Image 1 (cartoon, rainbow, N blue to C red):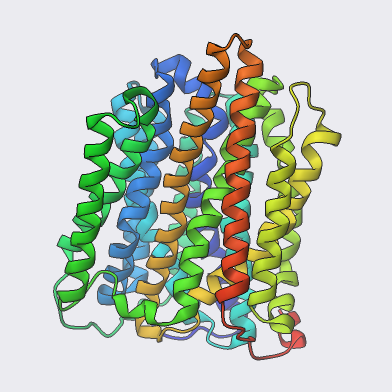
Image 2: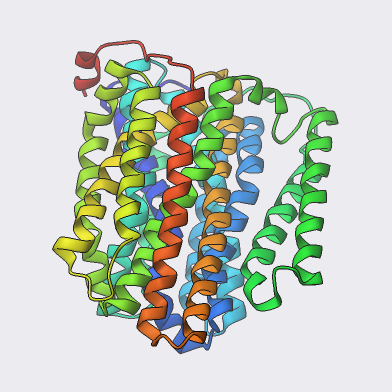
Length: 478
């Protein structure tokens, strides 16, 4: 791909990030609209989670393939194709009149979103080859990924309150058109050097099937029973498919996920941290939104507004603060410290009372989570990408994004199941509905706190300290 110079390169970054923001928003923008979807389309409590998970599963399942296709056939071409698919699926979601159509369209959205996200990160890494500029660019990208989820809650609340749940999807149409036009203008149509080898369809099918079956088993565990033949059977099949995936990747000529990548310690550590951190983040996004709505009685708009302080903190980090910290202190310290601060924020949410007040019981956790996410996200991404050759940028970005999305999908399934089981137990013991719901949410936050703490410990103990070259002044130049 031809290198862009000057301000054109930064304009290209902003256009790419707007496209990524649209993708990330759709992970959480539906959260505050879920009650409306449940009423309009008749979802059960168990089936409703698939509005979120159908998107996350196909997203995570196709990230590796999207990165590989970008490396083989051109990142710009794949970005535009994924953008078209995502935008068309958004239209189908917005017009959906049945449960099946909505879930199916969400799954197609996930495929398009996977391609866009994997290729966008490769494009950014190739646009910015200098360490200081790359840290600055990744800070912007990190904000989009970290803050996009909570911005989605706010935007979903506004659209649902002002119009209807359909508009949380229809809003993607004009954004998709504008991003497409911007990319045609700003990104050159250069080609990449293709590498011999067939696409690893067997690897894509086995890893996607393993993850989808695992999440389906966890989601249905409470209703079917954790020791039921269905739950145990699905988990066993998922494990066998995952083993098959590893065997395929060790033998195929052009693997979807080269296992050799994980010989780089920082890449392996960053991906493990990404899984745990993403699971913790979804404790924040989804469980907090449900607590605010179902226990405190917030409407959709106020749920969105509740996340604004965290969004503002993460925005401050994206506007250069994160890059300066990385340049000055390297990757390890900001990573583990940010994860620890986020764990403290989740710990505060684990004690939220039945009659919680925003300023006393909600805002402190929001502030800590915004600070922790802003501090940790950029180092996690850089640790996962810095040790690879440019020719493998798509593969590495696909791997780390898969870690994030699969951590989120599996984490959400586990946390929702934990919360549901605790809520049922409290109801069975005679607790009123709001008390039971609050108890379930508190236990989910405890688990989320554990995920974040474990991620912080792994990052602090195992990540190799690798400072990013360059000076803060170079970062500040843009």
